[in-house]
Image (cartoon, rainbow, N blue to C red):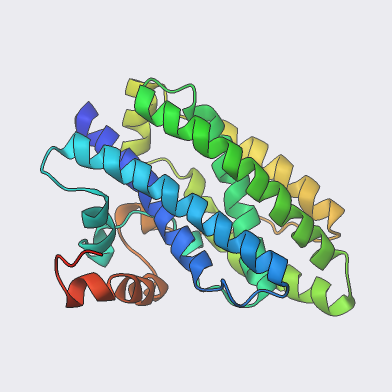
Length: 252
């Protein structure tokens, strides 16, 4: 893998994470407990999809084969996506969705902060813009996690189960592969070990305030960064790509 290939792979991965999480959030636009929260969720989903568009547009330029953002989103197979397993998991109940967002956003914010200092100017510019959005997302969703954890006995038990069930997918965010190594060495990319230490401290503080227990690290699921996904992604991709696959080349 040369530097250009590593850069393309890294940018595409960032786009995949943003797109898949945005799509998951779109699924529950009308399913949140308050109208105000549904509107907030819809806006957050649009933020992620907007970030995906910027990353995919750059990926198309790097690839140089004439592909644009729609090609990356709608015309790739499941095993070509490199998003984390965590964010492809089904929404479940409200506590599941909030827990997933807090776990990912706490990581993503630290990653974006590091990427603003990376050696690729285009990524640094996108990261600087996205950082402001994700900082607000994290603050908003953290407030909900605290309300659920420190609420009724039922809300506490259910959101603790959400933490316990989703924790197995968090290790992949910090697992360094060839793409991460090459990007770090050639483009001053993020130090995932350092990010993990800070992420764990931040998550511990959030969970403590929410009176929730932080699980101990054990076996962690992995494979998303290499294109090996859970069955959940297949259903998401099929729904997301249906119109384009049915009517190839259609435009609005």
